Length: 106
Image 1 (spheres, rainbow, N blue to C red):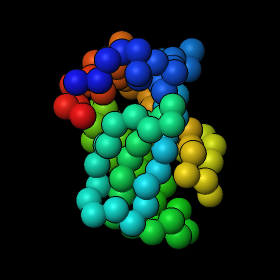
Image 2: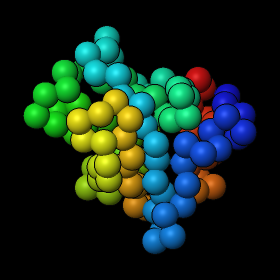
Image 3: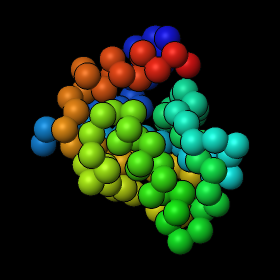
Image 4: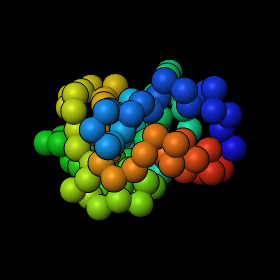
């Protein structure tokens, strides 16, 4: 279980009923998964290479499943060609998101 202090800063309310999430992407991983906190961001591992937005799309899919929202509720805000990204997730509140992250068992 991740302490709230570690997750603090990785996720913030966007003021529009959703959250903004800082993400550290690890493409070409062995499996698709949330992998804890790395360098001030939530780390997501995905199996696809970072080509033509495939890794971004798969990260959005993994995030949607994790936060229990539809795929269309997750959108890339910045960092499309970087390992450091920001995603917006609609349909989940900051307290709920922090609870989900803490319960991820990492």
